[in-house]
Image 1 (spheres, rainbow, N blue to C red):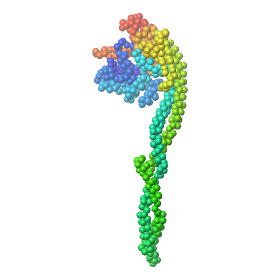
Image 2: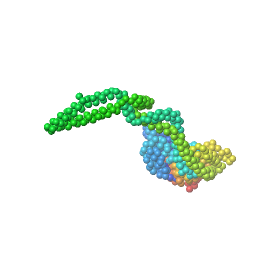
Image 3: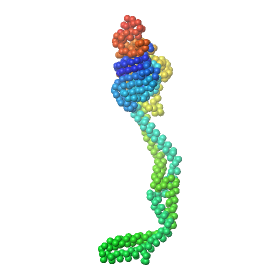
Length: 550
């Protein structure tokens, strides 16, 4: 509920500070006194765009601040979504600077206008005879029926299931798109994969093949070098082994004479053993070395295959080719498996669709059961409000379309006269009739859901005294569970309020200002008497005013 409002430097308001109570609050005042200015300032709190022309003093900033008790409004989720700290006593402030810039704050945290609008529509509903578009809006009409049908839980489950349904359909679209593209590339990818698979590539193979090619290509030169090496070691005349053997024997004799030659002997003997081992390996290489033209051809062919694959795939190592082979294998396998993936996804979608249809049918049936009660309540209230022949034909049809709140389409048809043709509300009802219908609907909704503070702005225009009494009774009844404001010119409505404020103009130093004052009981009597009979209050008007208040 709105607990207080402060307005500084706005239009004809210099500085206004007022506190409000729960229940039914009346605001009255002469035409032009500034009631619309009060609403204009309040609308800025609710997120309306600011206008520099609103500044009373162009050199000072305009500040409008409202305090709300939001304890029972269940706004914690909204505050979280808007990245705001939740406070049961929430303060909204709007500033318009002389430069024309506008700033908004919620609990002293700066916010965007969109956040202010999202919060504002959950706090105050300003309703005038000229603002009845909400009544003909499908979403509002569904809100009314769903309140009576108590479908909130089912709609919540439906919404979650619908998100799942949309996600699965998006997955299916991706799979089909992948399949379409993959089919185009499948044959080529299969060819490339087959080529790589047949090559039977092995990591490290290239180095081995290149070494073997070098050996097979230089067989004669290698044989010649091996023979020369053997001769240098084993020749009887000049061979290293013969010479080293003779040196070893000589040093052996010296080591017998003196121990100091023993180390030389041992070192020479070690060298002889090592060279003898080298000689044995050279002999083995010679024995195993032979020309093999067929193998040379095989190695050349193998290297040609590998180098061709390098060029085709623009790589330089076998390891990179193996990575490409694995990637192609995955692509080909995915293409070959996509049919089963699509079939599986369609099966999942069908199951979720069946769940959605079941929830939509449950929502539809609960709504259908609630419609007769809504129709009966609306027509009964409108009969009290001077529309005894008003009739509704609320048609609910289960469609094939998945909407956000189910699969229903809704036609809210209305006829104001007996035997009249049922037409959509916006075509069948006048502005005054729409206002009374909206009042009836809001009064019914208060029995089922927690509504924000509502402010009726002269919706009683053109209404007779008896009907205005009924309207006042309805608004007073609504105020038992919510905060209700009524800006009115009718004394019958003004008398039913729990609290009464008067908007008036005052001239100070040839400057006009708009003010708002709370009336006590005696002041209310005078105000209502003036509403009944004019500025010059008669005794009969005062008596009538007292009667209305009592």
